[in-house]
Length: 342
Image (cartoon, rainbow, N blue to C red):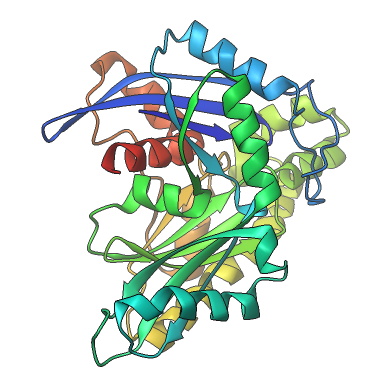
């Protein structure tokens, strides 16, 4: 199965296989798109621009060819800024009545008309025909976005096996099978999300208008250097920068996300009577020097950067490289794993 994540600054692709209980990373590839941006009718104004629509299918073809990926069945990850996620309770009811109840409740949460969106949902607690309320996790995706991804897959010569929201894909890649209660923060180029995963199940998902490009812009302004150079400095020194002005400025930018982590964790604890045990970081900014330690200090909880490749077989020589790349590949890996399980 092939998993594809069309991000704001890069396209990531993984090819995985399953044999019995074992899983193998067959291949991977990515391409950055620094100089190939343009406005898109689907773009959400969150301080960045979307990938050129014309560029995406060609880039996917290029990656597949360069990485020698022959598999045609592909699952695409849909970015959080194109999706709407929420959870709600419905009364106990028979299985046959649940879909109608979900549709009715969705219309109260989703701002677009129901005819313009496609819904995906699952029961995350309770059971049909039982005596307790059912908690539903709902994802809504505009039909326009789905049609766009269908066209991209066709132009890239792929068979569109499925599409999945980024939040559920990342949760599967990093916390599948975990018995812990985890708060997962994904800091992306165009937006950020905080997800609560309990006993391996995604229970909450929140999106925020915070993008990692703000960090590089801060360094650029402080040092008077261009964005490419600022990006290198940020990635090398991060919050631990020997320049106290830069370090403090980056901490001030990150702290609102830390506040969100604390607030969301506290709300979950109050409503579910379960304490968040660990914080996972992913996305391109997860490896920012000093970020884990800063969160540890602020929240008093362990923050780690999990490796989405850890359960897969691959040549040992790739260990360090894959670990460093993991935060950027978690969505692609998550949808590919989901595809193998369908």
